[in-house]
Length: 239
Image 1 (tube, one colour):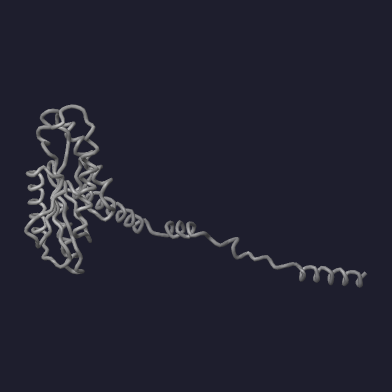
Image 2 (tube, rainbow, N blue to C red):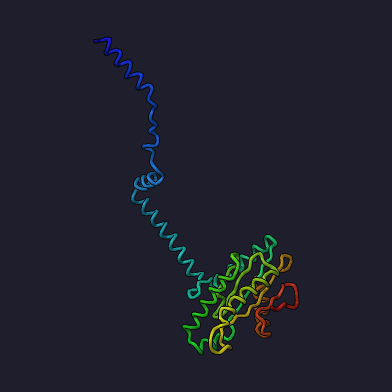
């Protein structure tokens, strides 16, 4: 009997040695989410309150910044932010020796349109034009509602090729309203003035705004869709 018991123990030992060991390392390994929840629950109530307060502060700060820099009607940046952002882009262009251009446009006879169709329709036109500008500009361009019926677009890294940007934006906006019924003289249309500055030319925010404003006046006086003034030149090019 003892002999049989000894043989039985030997066989059991041999079978155990032949079976592969089971790797249990992953069975009880917590996931990243579990670790995060564990740390969260491990925090004191005071620490939790501080974290929540910081998150709420960041969210409120972001919303306040959006409201302070955005035009409520069109969703474009507002004039206050235009000044700050233009100064920033001017400093960057000077520092790295890059070109920079500015486009300013407004709606022809917009007061007559408002008088004829009412302010609600006028607001619709402003919002529609803002959307068309965003659709037709490049990803790097920065659009603003510059005034009541005026829009401005900063064109970083852009010199004389701003001509093509102006052609596309003005053409897109004016084509969208070309089929509108009624008095053709009341159809919304925009004209644009562009100040184009190559890398080697002088640069300041005031200079860009002055050149773009003058180019816009020339375009409207001559019935052109846009006029481009190159900083450093005396004469402008029209479209």
